[in-house]
Structures are given as C-alpha cells and as structure tokens.
Amino acid sequence: MQLAEKHSFSEAEYLAFEEASPLRHEYVGGEAYAMSGGTLRHNRISLNTASLLLSRLAGKPCQVFMSDVKLHVARDRAYYYPDVMATCSEQASAANESQVVNDPVLVIEVISPSTEGTDRREKLHAYRHLPSLQEYALISQDTQQVEIYRRQGDIGWLYITYEPGDVVEFAGVGVALPIEELYAGTDVA
Image (cartoon, rainbow, N blue to C red; front, top):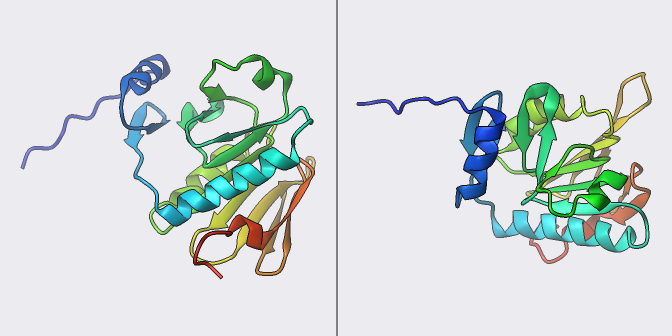
C-alpha cells in the first residue's frame, strides 16, 4: 500500500487552494482537512438557528454567518467553518467581500457523532482564545440539548446546559430562543 504524500500549506497557499476547490477544507497548523457533508437534520438545525438569530438581530450592528464563511484563529494558524457565527464589529460590516471572520462574538457548532470530538476539544480550545468571543455553543443534532461556554470576564468560562422546554440565552448577542424553535422541522423531540 502506498501512502499519500503529506503536504503542508502556508496560510496564503491554503486560502488560494480553498478558493479554487469544490470541497471545503478546514486548516490547522499547515494541514488542510476535507469536511464531510452534513445530514438533513444537521442542516435544518443550523438553518433554524441562523435564521432565528438573523431575525432577532435585525436593526442591530451584528451580522450572522453560516458554514460557508471561514473563521480565522490566528493564534493557532487555523481556519474553521463554524455552522453559525455572529459578529458585532464594524469590520464585518465593512468587509462584505471577505470570506473570513476574525472577531466573532458567538460561535455555534451543531454536533454529530463524527464531529463531536473535534468540536468539544480542538475547536473549544481554539475558539476560547479569540478575544472577541463571548459564547461558544454546541447544539446536539440527536437530542434537544444546547451547551454554552460563556466568557466570565477574566475569571474563566461558565458552562450552561439547556434541555427541552428551556429558553436558550445567547447573552453575547442579547437573544433568547425557545429550544424547540432550534429543532423545528426535525424529528428531534
């Protein structure tokens, strides 16, 4: 068996490669990793979440992005594609042609069995080092459960879990959503 040759990319090479590629790849420390496709349920939960945030943030200086916009974590030389993220900076408003966000206030990943390990370990570690980030949310695609890591100033992070019947508070953007609205149109009860 012949092993594929491993090639490290500079950030500039990755960005050029990604722009020309029909597949999306996340980039960490010089390596590009192809992303797997999501399920209909995963897509519905992501779309519901983004749509609800977008409607609640209308008229505010915040923007909501979905999985086609990259998040740059400079400290880790990484680019990720979060399922949903929100930024409230003037930079995002001015950079409409950009495909990269550097300063999200809220990052949301819809977790599945294939992504859960990466979302809970690697991405949690990376995202928590973003100075702008106020909350990192993990939304389960298989049960009505939302976990939020919320920044508590300089003292650390508060961990909160929401379950069926709860109202999920995304405090970083000032939005509260009934958990069942995140799962509307799915078979998750």
